[in-house]
Image (tube, one colour):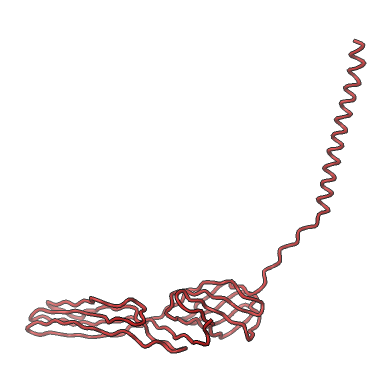
Length: 239
């Protein structure tokens, strides 16, 4: 009894003191860590991007676009908008108007694909590329009109040239895009396109049409061609 009383009480008191000391040391350590963290310098904010930036490109007509963005600055001797065509050259566009947020330029169809990558080169730098879809303009032309009605019957084959001279700088010229046959009247006869070149060809093969009609019959048809209106590349604008 006496031994338990003597040794038991001091042991409980000593254990509590040790636990309290450990708790105080732990709180002190956590306080020191918090103080050290609070003394660390704050990370500097990431600098804002500078230089021109394209947000939208609006195609107003077959060759007129409006580029919206920011930090284009004022027009300068070396400021320009370049267009890198999908299947063709990279050129500098003709500028109609230039302000800090808006650029109006001419984007010609060069028969070099349906899209282009635009970049703005301003006094403050060069923008990231932005894609734009070209607005393609076409026209239809009558290539041939054939009418035949003989009592003994008739047949034939037509070869229609569709190649055009290449467009000159800043001038537009038609490029063959396709042909279609339109029958106006027929009796015991038929006509069909048996061969035509690939669309947008440079040195095109002719469109070939075969036709016939039986005795006392007739055939009356037209061949229409669709042409893409493209502009010639100016050497001075090549990049």
